[in-house]
Image (cartoon, rainbow, N blue to C red):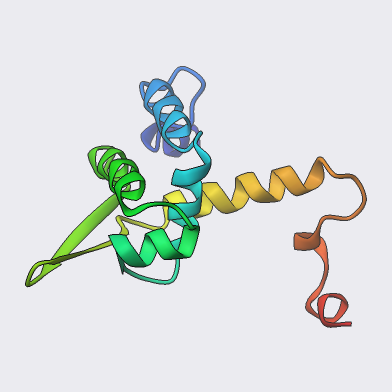
Length: 121
């Protein structure tokens, strides 16, 4: 079991700890978190993303460039348009978990702990 943890970098002395901190730093920006949330359901163009998160296309492009360098998003070209999508499910999961943790700070029972029946009542 310890061998499994070491292989995937979860040991406290793992060489991946510093890289994990860089991932957290990359996501330590509200615009980038909103971009990740907007891309959860599929690819979008810069203009679609800008509309979804109510930021200028220029600002969104700058953040997308950083996310692309960090290999969190990837692109697909169609004629003159570029579509962005999440590279894998991990950035989306990190953002979801961070939001769930933030909900805990409000006290009471966080929304993500409610059952489906309670949520629709």
